[in-house]
Length: 313
Ligand code: FES
Image (cartoon, rainbow, N blue to C red; front, side, top):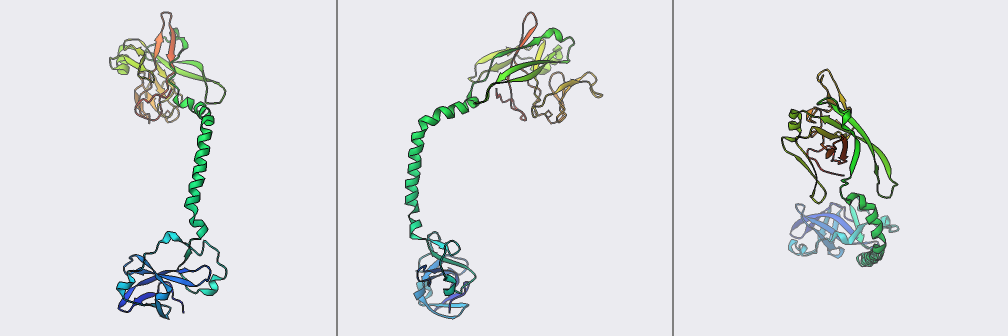
């Protein structure tokens, strides 16, 4: 009779556990070991089939020796075996009737050499990668260049302040600039900024009485917006998620506000958030106005959706 998996394993001086699995010799297709899980869910010990004295019925397996001798049998090294679901052993079911439960067979010898074979495979890959590195480096560098290129602090002419006639009202200025993304050809993109001719109160709200300094990627100062300069330029991108916004008069704000149509963030003439999900005020750009009124800006871009200004371009 063959034991049922879950059968009680009993030594001469008492129960020691339950049969949890069996190991089968893949050639003879006979059981070579029974695995006994110690009482209380303890370790599993691997007991040779020769130690099985009797199987009085399928619910009980009698082992030779005492419980103390039983505990000297080795602990099952599960990684050294595969289940019979993973290997094909012809007619095995003709020899076994121990369902349900896990039936193990030793890991095929060929596969046991895998760590060694894997070592050689990995080494071959590593050598290949080293040889390819000089060729791959220029390509990778070229592709990644846009991620690491320094901030573009070019000044872009955007128009003339003569167009800005009234105080504390937003006037839109459009301009185009070229963008080159990795290996793609350069594209011309239309962008815009909003310029406000600010009264002292609005200037104070924007700058807090202090000049605003802009830096390059090395921390060097590239421009200072004077706190008393009347014209202020705001990036045309909403700091929430980057949509374009407009200057609008509304019922609640008859003097006008900047209104973003995407998620209805509202900003006053100083760029301060009055309503909506925007995490920070409108982004002030480095801007200079010549004696003749020509306006130039540096097209700084900050990360959208975050409280602090994180410069991207
Ligand atoms: S993008 Fe402007 S409010 Fe969401």
